[in-house]
Length: 494
Image 1: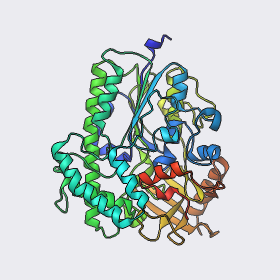
Image 2 (image 1 turned 135 degrees about the horizontal axis):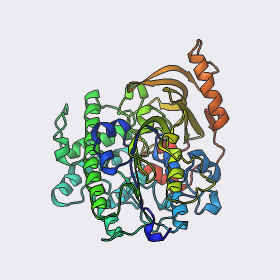
Image 3 (image 1 turned 90 degrees about the vertical axis):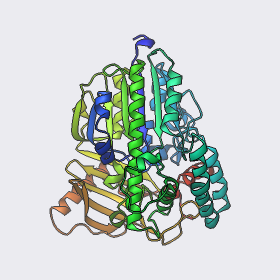
């Protein structure tokens, strides 16, 4: 096939976008794109560091860790034995480019391998200022700086500047992508945007907040500051249940705003001939979800890692594949199969390193069992979910509230559990729970039979529920990236 006739490939991934938020707010997007909607899609983990390897390289997080002893890809495939999605496309002649303001999705972790541009994940001046404050190690100074940003600087930006969001927004990325594509269609283009509009601090335009019923009237900046404080402290110390409800409304408003920007972007791509349904490929998904049920989950947001609750791992997945007719698939599917399938759809050889499988038809994406894998402090955590809603996984909950930006964990701050849960009609309930060091199993069937069946398959296919890490810790540059986004839970305890 001539390079100019090749399909274009667009990957549009939103950080922290829950599947139920997509269903509730974005029902027009599938018709606009003309793709297959997978209503029961599952990420491979609950946080970016452990979930994105499946999209970047078609592998589980523990595979990256086994190769590099961290969650950082090697500088090349020769170093880690992994060929990324972009490397496979680039080697086949595609022009690949990546946009994101998330440090985890960028050059510092070598997620840019195979992409032509090298500025993805570069910190803004706001993030650089945050780095400085964090390095000082003072919680009081950090809290004061955060208050100053949201209550002084952000309102001034909102009034006088067009770029008034904490992260670079969707509209800015869309301008850059359209500019990179030019006025006329060229085939063989791959463009990936990883958006932060739906990631905390939730800071949608005021007109989107005004449509939401809030318990307490607050300015946009104050609500964004509240969401930041609640999620950084993980369990929202000193924050009421009504405040958490307002934070979730701000999150949904941010999702709604992203939907509108996405719809305009796709419309422009179609109008200019860059994306033609039935000819080109487009993926709309997210790396993980977001949780607000702190009573049952023991957390707000999507950390500490790991926590494989439904709110955190069920993600939207919409795929426009030239070989597929538009439609809906309700079977359970996994992110691990997305990139092998897309590479095959555009005639690119699937690298041997990819752990997923190629789906010739949408229904072939269905999996009776899917797996989770997350590299946390001292341990690698795993889980398995059956298509009938039963799930077995290990998690780690915090016993005290700690400011994740300025404090490392200490002894006694958290404990590791094993959970058997069931998900039905948008509700997940715990059916069995034990501490990781206990040897107990459910004392009656059918729970015992389900538990033992899931455990046997998980152990056979991926490994034990929890295994100890044998590396010597996290390199300084990777540690800083994790602290930047509040992922101190991904760091070894001191």
